[in-house]
Each structure stands twice: as C-alpha cells, then as structure tokens.
Length: 461
Ligand code: NAP
Image (cartoon, rainbow, N blue to C red; front, side):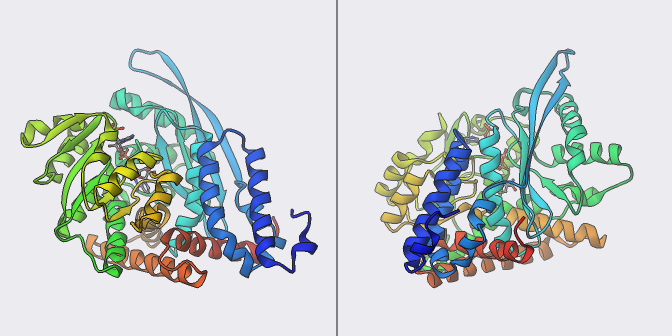
C-alpha cells in the first residue's frame, strides 16, 4: 500500500506514521459518510502507531488495510405485517467482519437509528473486544432499523420471524453466533432461535447466545456486561488507591447493561444517584432502587418516568442529556454511542468526577475522551470494560457444546477472572508500548496483536 516503503524503511517512526495516515485516507475515501465507522477506526489507528514502529512486518502484510474491510456485509429486506394487516418493510443487516479467531460473534440491535455505518463500527470494535476476552471468537454485528418500542409482542414476533427467515442462511454454531444488543433481549433471542430451529430442523442450541437458561442459555449472561464493566472499573480504581465504597455513581440508560452495572456498583458500596432512558432521567441523592428499575423495565416494560410512583423522593427530569450536570465521583455511560460529548465532559470534570467506565459501545466522543485524559481522569474504554457480556456468551457456547450448564456462581467467578485478565493485559500492553496507565492504547494494542498475528499465520486473504 505504501508508495515510498523503501525510502522510509530507515525511519520506523515515519514509516508507521505514513502507513497509518495513508490507510486512514483510503478508508475515508472508500466509506464516505460512515461517520461512526470512521470514528471507531480513527481511535484504533491513533493507538496502533507504536505497534507498527516495533513490527514493520505488519505493514508489509497489509494488516490495517485488511482488518478494516469486513469479510462480508449482508443486507436484506424484512417485510412483515402489523396487527392491522398493514405491510411494513425494514432493512436487515449482518456484518461478518473478522473470523481470524473463531466464528463471527456479536449482537443484534433493533433501533430506528440502525444503519450500515453503525453496524460496521460495532462489528469493527467487536474484533478487538472479542480478542481481549481470550476466547476463540471472531467478530460480527447485525440488526435492523425496526423500532420495537411502539409494537405489540405479536408484531415483534412476526418481524423477527421474517428477519430470521433470511438471516438464518448465514448463521451456524461454527460460522456465526449472534446475541442481543439494544432492543434485543431474552425474548427476542427466543423468537430468533425458534425460527432458526423451525427452518433448519431439530434443536440447535449453539447458534445464539443470551438465550433463556430454560433451553440452553447461560446463567449469568444477563448480568455479565454490567457486572463485568464494574469488575473492570474496580480493578482500575484499585490500581489508583480507590474503590466503589462510598462513591456517588451515575449510570446512563436503564436497559440490560445499566441495570446490572447499577446492581453490582451498589453491592460494592456505591450509591447510584441517577439513571435514564431516552425520554429523561431520574435523580435521587439517597440512591436509586435497582429492584424498582427491574420491575419497570423488565416486567412492566414502561418508561423510567414512572419510578416516581414508587419513590416520591426521586426527581424526574425530561431530556436525557441533563444527567451529566449532576456532580458525582464515577460515571458509567451504558446507553448508546456518542451520548457524552465535550460539553458534558467539561461539566463532569468541573464537578469533580474521578473515573469514567464505558458500559455502552463508544458512548464518549473523541473530544470528550481527550478532555478526560488531559485532566487525568481514570478512563476505562468500552472494548475492554464491556467485554464481559461477550466473554460469557463464549462460555454459553462452551456449555452448549458440552451439553451441560454451569451454576451462576461458577460463571460469575470465571467472569471476574476474565475481567481481571483483560485489565492486566491492557495495562501491560500500554506500559510495553510507551503509554503507561493509558487503558485505551493498551486495549487497542492488546486486542490487535492477537488478531494481527493470526492474520499473518493464515496468509494473505
Ligand atoms: P437496552 O437493554 O436496549 O438498553 C438501552 C437503554 O439505553 C434503554 O434504557 C434506552 O432507553 C437507553 N437509551 C437509548 N438512548 C439513550 C440516550 N440517548 N440517553 C439515555 N438513554 C438512552 O440495550 P443494552 O443491551 O443495555 O445496550 C446498551 C449499550 O451497551 C449499547 O451501546 C450496546 O451496544 C452496549 N453493549 C451491550 C451488551 C449486551 O450484552 N447487551 C454488550 C456489550 C455492549 P429507551 O428504552 O428509552 O430507548
């Protein structure tokens, strides 16, 4: 790819910089308008320069050019009928990005904002995250611009049956194993697995993770992403002489990741003072009651606003962005990409925040991250901090293959070990490549090396 590779070979730094720059320009040209995908690649590229200085053979093998181009992208029409018999058409996606380490693995998202750029950024991030878990899993992501929010349960089921009728062609236990993400929980995974079994015949336990434990789901999977984020944060705090004990914590969102991040942070002695959904946030200085959140979100399927019905001491404020104006010690953004920007970061820093841990994927903008780092705020990046969910998904795949199930305690113990390993590996990579304590650089490098080495082993393809 590099035009002047021979000239610059004597200057490894220049060679690495030129290479990263040229490949990024190429990607920009090849993926116009894919803002989120370009944002995600940019962040990784910035971290990888020192890797190419030390390992110029990756340049000769064109690793960056190849790792940024998905193995394949599948898009398809999803036509379905609502309860009134009206026909609707949505678009389905599966981005099978990288299978160097194992079958494609990554969630399915149902949200009106879903587009190709968002699918590609999520699948690209998944490469490094899945590598960090140490488990044999490749990377993918999928979903649809279908909005489950205003739909009946039967409409959701019919939509999923149509979605899976096409997508099943590309899935399999050794090929591609999806799970949940925004708008897709146990119920939706159940409908997907049901339709897959109906079309392919028999009972196929290893094609989805995040299933109900009644039919092959792993205990502890529902809790894994939120708990894992808190376990990772706990390690980061410990290294810096802190803990969750007595800290005021803000967790955005009130879905799967947020709920279990709140639960674990509270168990470790923190007070969670605010959480949100896309309509607004609730704030209670005395602490949010997670059991009430579970009741509202998992059973009643209602809005966060109704929390006040159960706890009159809490305030509900319309608009979710105001949550970052509340002074606190630790912030765990668990809702969606780019939910915390430069202005939010400025306010949080002014109000004395000590640590940020990304539970959602890419919730902080690059400008916000730069501010946190400049101000020495501890920062746990998503691809490391929220890897607990996919790590337990890989454990679910193992249990399905072995036809057995581990107890909740066994899974939770393994999860804690995985999160500690990820933290240690990030710290070590950051140190080794000259950025001590920088977990962003550490996560990107540690995740990259394993995949890059497998790409070298597998040859140019
Ligand atoms: P979820 O269960 O659907 O929950 C998402 C929550 O975020 C909902 O409460 C939603 O509220 C809220 N939300 C959406 N946009 C918001 C905004 N702008 N401000 C405040 N709240 C907002 O999804 P999830 O599975 O928890 O996923 C959340 C994030 O974690 C995503 O970035 C996902 O990719 C990432 N993640 C998930 C997993 C996993 O295992 N599930 C693993 C790794 C990473 P409404 O209901 O009002 O939309």
